[in-house]
Length: 316
Image (cartoon, rainbow, N blue to C red; front, side):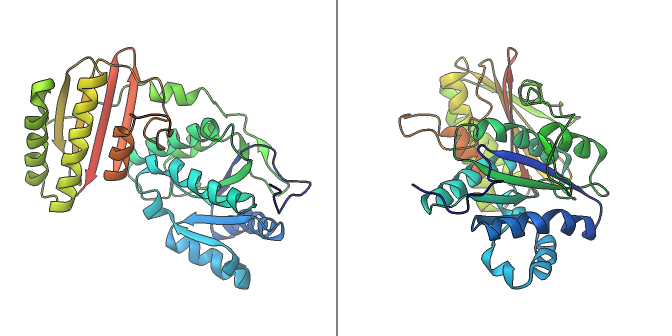
């Protein structure tokens, strides 16, 4: 299949850049040439930004904004673990139409929770692996250098191989592709206090599900969100029994704005992308973590020689 929009600057592989901006002017200066170039090459141009950033770009683009596909990243990327799946779908649609994909995505927008920023960083680090063998496309990720926490700004340079400049992308001297494995293999920080704990085995799957459902209701979650957390708990407990040595441990706690449930077992997960996209058609299993990502606000998976932990957060 021929691909429209090819040019002397068309990528031959996935290209992942970070745009560091300080205000509206530097935001527009970094994005408008990128967007205009994509439109000139008849590429599929997709912008995933918060609504206020979208409005700024729409106004600056004028009539050209009608040729851009606009997505609300605060919905699309509410759980960062869903973003690779969303990118995969967008890439497949563009490729099927014979076009290259060019995207803008601000997954780490100002105002997110600290735990969400940690997952945004892992998401960014995993993008290179996720799209290493697919059709070439470009992704530019804006990061607010004024309102974001310092560690998030530093992480942006660590997780992107290229830094956008007025003359094109330059290599990031801080880029560390090995950081994905390091992040994935580092245990999550423990909760501070007020933790309810238990264990489960093959005979305890239904009681564990009921325990989580009761905890969700006690946290004041809506019926819909309680049921989603209950179903996620059932999937995770079953995964532990099947793949984590036959048993596991459960921890539950609440914060000022969230209900948190954590499952741990002795198994080791060697694929950091697990749950971030559907399993291949040739596989009959592997859907549990994917389903949990679709159900929950935030899913944090960490695994190493010490075992595997899946922490699920539901915002209240």
